[in-house]
Image (cartoon, rainbow, N blue to C red; front, side, top):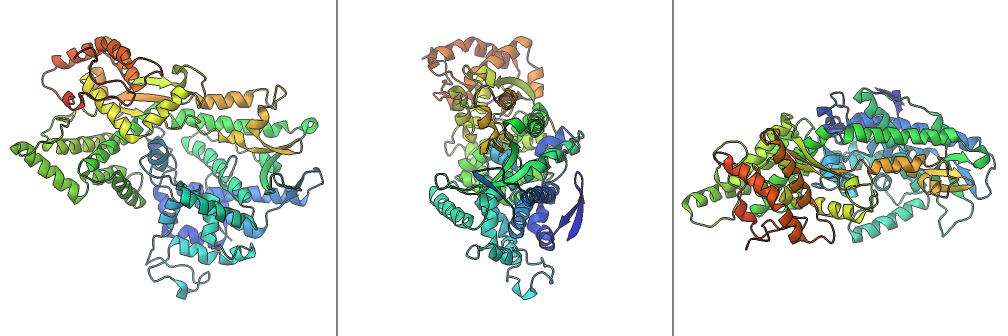
Length: 618
């Protein structure tokens, strides 16, 4: 064993095989990836990395395994349906490896680009793990006392090849010789693939692994509810934000692995649980600890992850990529081409290098540049008819054709992101603004999520709003979280209670005699209330508007964003015309124009279903 020193945990003991994995370039890449993305633009201390977090997660995983085994060693026959189990050394080694590599597929601003904005495929699928782990590094060498030098692949060590070599004996100890170590790791840290054909194979392989291996237990300890991932990042994030949390280890003492003595519906797989005992001996301190962890996670979301300035910068990032993606499409390059190019560049990049990377994407491929030049020449000579496009960016400049002007806009948006030129809030729609239950299943809210999780719909709304309201091109950005559940999964931790295993939130729902007297349910609902769709506007444009114009703009932005089910689109659209007239008069009063050309949207509809044109004018 050797040691690394980290904030929060201090000295962390690591096996030599784990150090060999850490030393591999695919893992060292995580030193360039921040844990909290754009949060450092609001909280200067939030510059810690995925590298630090992943190593810290190994320590938490070890602590959990140690307490599970201690409880198993001291076990008494306290159940007629469930026996207590331990975690043997080979399984523990894979749990540690899973904790170490659970984030190895992360890219700079990964959660933002994948989960929030839907520009890239998810980091926690097998596709990303395979891509990261199959990159060869010809110049990388492994400790000769661990691996025979003659085994080095011709192209160099990939992370996948290294894991298979280092952990092949551990896989055999588990009786999993027909599955290589990388496959076992993948099924611990990855979600199933989305393609049905691949998903069926994945499920079959998981079942095969689980025959001789506590796969569900490993998954839960590494990265499910209260797990190695969560317990490390929660305390690490608050530490670097400057508000350290007290790390109470009491909850570890209640962690166990339980297995049914008789299968139910064919399921007898071991389960990772927190034992809170039966009613007469309930461990209320355990329940309080879970509530405190849930509250700390809520506060992290409320204070940091959904800080209005961070979300405004996220909107700038989104608008930059939306404009770049539209450019790619106009020159005949698939959206997948942009996603592939972005993923390849991000694998080599850092958070600090994002502005340069975005500029590389905007400058594009040879085909993109050639098409922009040809389009500009064609426009000047009027030899061909181009699709009508916005005429100029919101800052003065000479457009090099309409596509060139769009490229210039994208580059200016990127510079604004780099220089932290924050847009100001124009309007905000909260969950409370939608009639019906304040729950993720609200059908009106679900309609909004379905519309705006699609990148093209966000771009259409922003551009059409700029055109309809006479606003400069690029003056609006938005943030609309695609999921209203807001990560309250801590509440779903498995409790061992009353001689049964039940998720905390499900047990809490059982009548009035619940465990926390409604405190858990109330906290979960607080998570839901964090959801909001926000439209931001260029501060200079906002400052130039009168108070009356701002009021009319807010009304227009909200109305065109979402159409109430059952409402008559023609009536709603006509009701907005007086507000639009006020904004158009403001546009007409300005000398010159830097606004979007309206003609390209004649006869079209906003993503909400409202028409761009006034329905009363034929």
